[in-house]
Length: 196
Image (cartoon, rainbow, N blue to C red; front, side, top):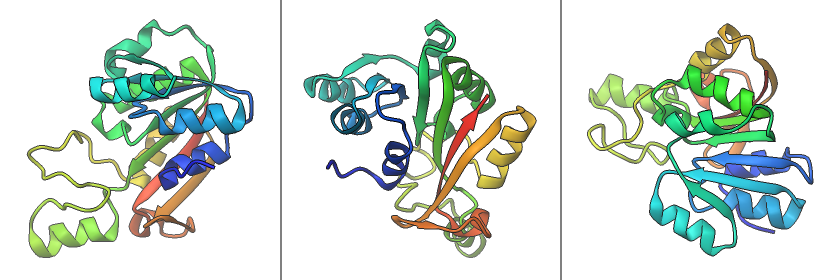
């Protein structure tokens, strides 16, 4: 069994075998390879970084180079069972439009992101007066690809405003799942499964 990043493992565990999956911002294709090899999924990927595209293609994966902010419009409606956006929402220009695209292309969408309201982030701002650098937010403010600092409560409000249904939600503290109680304060990372 492939060792995946914890949020990707949650996603892999909850995808139905044999599904058609589009992994947007797929990185080196680790999730796609696991879905193909362990669940018999037809996994496709879209990735902006040419080095990651080459790595994924080298693994025999179907990945194209492209920008999620502009290139998702070319995918037909309902062409996948699942659209996956992991660790990418906070880097998109319009997260609300991105959710619309995910749920236009896929019947369901997995979205994972770092929680910028985690207590360590708050503590860094409150006591250090500086933007945090953490394991999940490893870049300094001036070189980060993160242009939207989303929190779990912000995402829940966006989902509610967009009239999407939450099919599932998981929260991580470190590499372990944590409860939903006070997730906005205690979870470092969130994974949501949505349906349009």
